[in-house]
Image 1 (cartoon, rainbow, N blue to C red):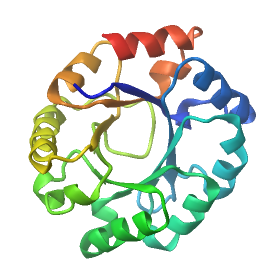
Image 2 (cartoon, rainbow, N blue to C red; image 1 turned 180 degrees about the vertical axis):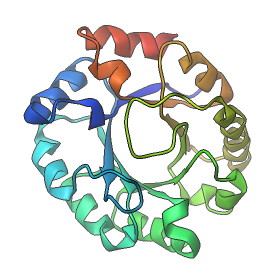
Image 3 (spheres, rainbow, N blue to C red; image 1 turned 90 degrees about the horizontal axis):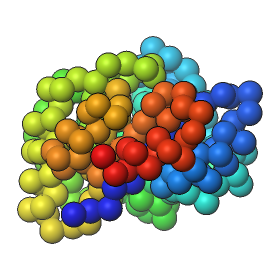
Length: 218
């Protein structure tokens, strides 16, 4: 079984002290720092860009996972790579026919790449690029805002992706993002996910080390 990695989403952090928040969750045991980049166009929210990532990079040695919820992501991937992202994931819905090319461009920058699909996008849409990816991210809410409720219809899609990953024979992480709590984390792990994004579930707890360990072990 692949190692379970916990990836707190900083969308739920206190932005007034973001550096110390990232240091805190790293010390608490986070494996990955999930960075939700939103442009107000692809999703109806605006978060932050590469400058912020560059400025908080010194606060953690954990993997920086830049989830680009933006239109025309190929115009910005170099900036995110230079800012310190270790892996850059792009949406199939945003890339369309340029998906394969965009993933190859990310790889060429010397960082890992991944593809993301929304809850209503078929796994078939990404089947031909899975072998290019280091990670597949399945959204279990519609992207844009934290604190949403988990959509259980995504569970069969995790299983589908897990079968495709197994068939590929490659070491590809399967990440789940949206509404993950102690009550449903076992379901997504059992379906095949091994990278667990959790925002408010982690940041709203006073003992973050405890909740990260619980999410890892449940």
